[in-house]
Length: 319
Image (cartoon, rainbow, N blue to C red; front, side, top):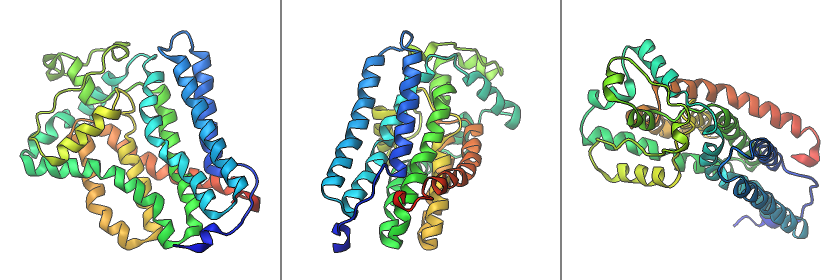
């Protein structure tokens, strides 16, 4: 154990990652207040945000009572543990707006001459391909944890910035999802007539997903990794957050950050990264334009988040 982790220290104010979390919390609270009458459970959403802020307050109190690197680490880690909470939460907002899947399904057809989300598994059939892509898709979760904790082994001075960059890039995506109601192929193609899709017609669904959250049943062969992915989807998936793909985008962010800390670890992750990006379309979670949008935004979001971090940490006490 690193005894230095428990050395006394005292730094005032919010950590950058806490500031980012508080900003997103207040942003969504303001939207809830503006849309109070239209939202299904606004009070519950406000209560959850009060708990988020209370959690930060408790950890800050522990830090000020027992200031050390260990208690500061707890403060930095807490916002990262909330990322899974904020993802399905976006559904409560975007469901209020007219669904736009018709536009993105049409874009796939015009750009690629087909529906890649429907054809990919036809081109690569069989259990081996299915398990490989589902393994890649599930690798998303350990990749996030690895990226967040890798600085503890490669350079502790990177931990604060890595935690901030990961959290803020997620918040960039979540902010888009609040106002861009795209459910994805596994929801949209379940809701519309297949014959219309086959003729290149994509119906507007309006507020359909405000009352329907059924996933399209998978026709892929059963397997261990497929069951893992389906379990994760059942617990947190909602008809939201399709464009741009945060799986493709955040895995790109992770590859960039990990590559700076350890080239060997980054190279070891390449097969999982490739399978993960392909899986977003293979399992019908995203349109191909969603995945490409994720790749582009992932590259763009990293320098933007790092610029924010640099500006927030100009004062030594905030580092």
